[in-house]
Length: 132
Image (cartoon, rainbow, N blue to C red; front, top):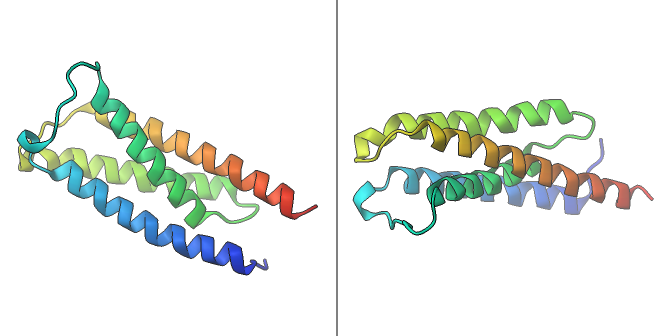
């Protein structure tokens, strides 16, 4: 499959951003719990932050891993990437003064799915537009 120069640049850029964003999530997930600002006036605000972070991550990773005609493969790679990262972060957090929460992992997966479907939608629109 021939990729245009723009597609290659986008894929390369998304790979760099994906790795940077992964490192950012690792850093923020392992930051000492007492130093993390709390938003107490919004119930479950931290779950929304988890979902947003993993939505951005999966959006970038989907663009990085996307291959034409291999949507199921891309989906499995993206979900596996985000899920494994989320599980590792939840398992490591108690070592850094944080709490392990199952709902954080659920929020991570929900965010992952949102980011995947959003990026897939945008990529499909791009494909349709360039094939005309």
